[in-house]
Length: 178
Image: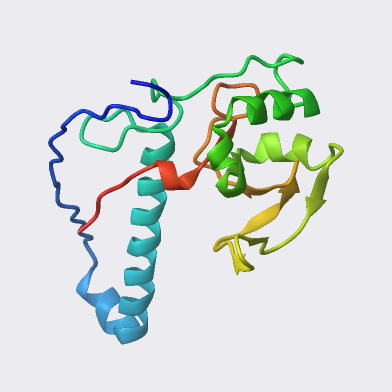
């Protein structure tokens, strides 16, 4: 098949259940009441979201999603400047991106990588970035670098480690949920 006519394999998707529990003393329940219940429910939701995001970036595919970092279909760019990020690295990453993904791509980086990126040319701090017909990208966009939104997450490895900066099209990553 050609690049414009790829072949896909039949795959079996297995649904797993996500469950969580916590142990709380009766005294804490009596003292906290309904506000404590709401707080703890929100806390569990945030924890589930964090670990799902972490698995989408760094998961090994065994009982969790296959993460972007170790995915064999990911294109890897060798750094021009060793353990830091440069404008040249951004140019190399953009060159490896599928042309159809350019208008939809996002940068995601670790806090250490962001400290470097935010000081580079072509970085513009911004909160909420207009993309595609004026729609606002949800989340906490830290700015725009090389024309694409930048999101900072602690779910990526430290600066100087493979995966500390990722350029990807979120439309190309599928995560089944029910």
